[in-house]
Length: 441
Image (cartoon, rainbow, N blue to C red; front, side, top):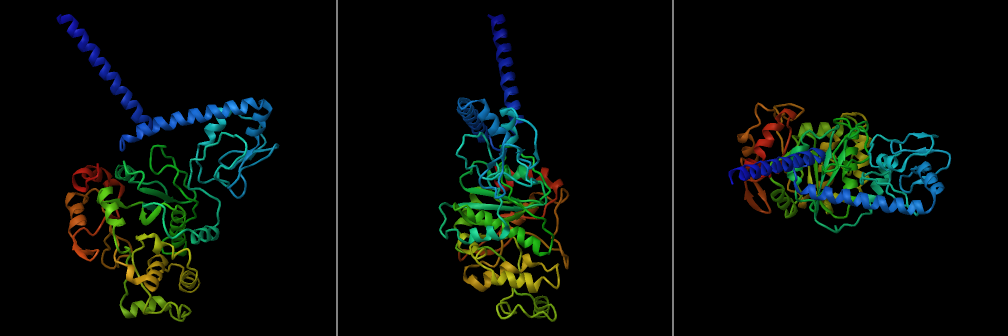
């Protein structure tokens, strides 16, 4: 009957509205519109946390309330960050603040345990406990190694990778302004990449667990443009990425970089390459010699001389074989730090050290170009920054297809997979262009 049909229509409409509201609520909870498959993962993650938490609670309860209180009150992180230790007189939360307060409810303890504070004086290390303490360390890239200890461990890493992942290494001041675009880029390819982030040490990230950038910050120090500290930051990223034996390629990017190809195309272009992508060119003779010797400082010789001194953009894409040269090198690096940069702190070591090292050691493996596009204004020290006024389909198409180069010995016009430098106000334009121009879903 008409009346029944109207009632059914209203019920159907009401049901659709409720379903729509549930979807919006869920999306608002995990902010995963960029990658719908993350919803299933989040359901599984929440279920796993509840299950593990229940098991831990039951086990600890069976040991008695005194045991539970002593475990919770005495939780602390060892100075090495490797194996947590215990104390009956004090407790330390994950922000590194010690106090002598009383016990804490276990649910509150678990809640605090999953908060990542990269500005902590004693960040949590990998959990290696004999006793059943419920503690989740979601900052899987954090550790307490010094720079020298990190270099030493990376130098001992195996040459052959156990996988074929690309390590995307971002050097940033703090937030990732183009995170939403990168999230779309990475969506659905979780087994083919890893991410490492080096930010200012005072930056405390606030990321949703659904983001691929969540928990991927490494221990950092302040990096200044043109100085040794910037090369040190790049080394930290590379060494941390090398320790992941599933990484076979390494890509260095900045916070102002964007992808101009979708993930499958760029992954295939990088991993199937027979050469490493890094610029290493020789400047004009007069400028070259002046910058190398810095007047009276000639201690770079005989290892570094005019013939092998090179310059190039620091934004590289290199394989594991070439990457392992860096932690195993001390001679070239010490030459640059002690002689090239000491008399002139703003020495642009990041534009010279790796190009010189790689050219001197494996020049036959280099493509002598980078996959990251940028433009320098005439005689300008910084690259051009594109904003909302000039970020359009024409610009992206020109970056993607308007150049000529060689790839695996054959000519091609697909010379760039990434580009910089973009202003944050260009993000809406880029998101609109991502699907139709770049092929990013």
